[in-house]
Image (cartoon, rainbow, N blue to C red; front, side):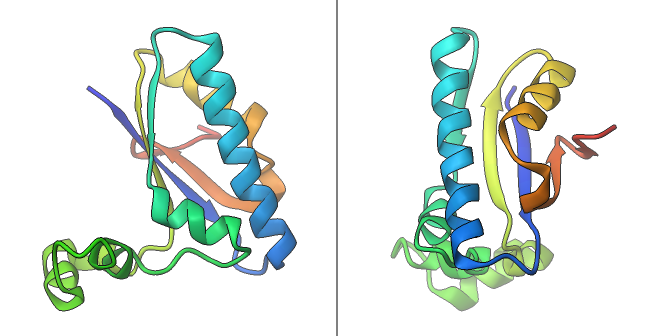
Length: 125
């Protein structure tokens, strides 16, 4: 069962800091995948692409609708409160939540995020 993580960017980041967050996420994914054979990582790519352009992720409903399979109003209806989320979602097949949280803390600068949720708990818990 994958662990769903939510990377929550800080609200006042510059374009350069948003690009740095994107690079940190990419590097963490590559490093984690290369060093541990028991880990499989899936990243919400449209939100990551927004960060790479130095922009905040668009609301989740818009990112999903941009895929063309559903219109924005239907996406918003189905997602409910999550429709306005600007978080980056990671789905990680991993057995050790504590090790995963520690690895994320090592790889993603805390200065760029409000929090990272690992499952339903903050990475600091």
